[in-house]
Amino acid sequence: MTPHDVRRIALELPGAVEKSHFGKADFRVRDRVFATLPEDGNAVIKLTRDQQEMMCAAEAAVFQPVDGGWGKQGWTRLMLAAADEKTLRSALVTAWRNTAPITLRKAFDLSAGGV
Image (cartoon, rainbow, N blue to C red):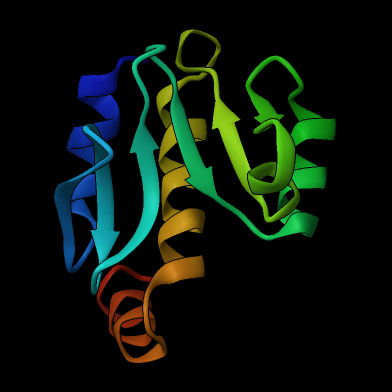
């Protein structure tokens, strides 16, 4: 997968917009960041600590905690070269759900059949 794929999938999510965070592309819902594209060609997504532990254990080649305090808050590096579209989409939807307000999550679940 590529940064272009991250951008395409992220912007398909309800209310998602692309902005910039310290000069790097990020994706937000209601002005809250759920994913970023740092310059290393990978993505960083907002997970809960439990989600992060599960995903990193299940697919260590794809998911790695971000170094330092951000990683301890659930921010997780997604290695795009090792990911397939299903994994990328699932991870971005999870990060979006972790960030989106409940009213938007409910509307998305109803309109998308619980994606």
